[in-house]
Picture 1 (spheres, rainbow, N blue to C red):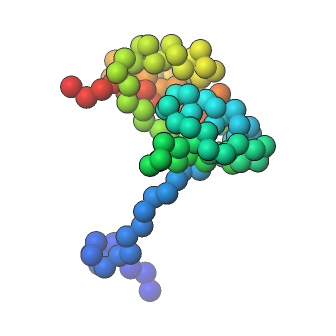
Picture 2: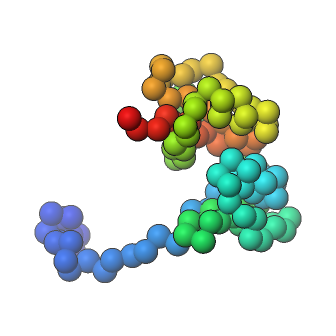
Length: 131
């Protein structure tokens, strides 16, 4: 028997705590260094097969999957992306490009946000501070 989510109230469902997000990649150390720099996080673990960064509250893990290929953008293969808020989008984009990110041609955000790809092709959006 399946349960429709409308049949289950929030008070009866076991509440989970998100402890981390894991990103598959070919080079965990490199991606950990990239995101640690972008986010200001500490590298808490770095090995060939696995790496981790965090700020004491949020953790991102990077797991080695050598055959992983980035999804085409735009396209249906994208499964997730990170949204990062910054005080100055143009400066952040320039900084992240200098760190090894790439800027895809397709930019659906116009002046509202910029889509970038990390050194392994994972997409992330650079978003302005809320006014």
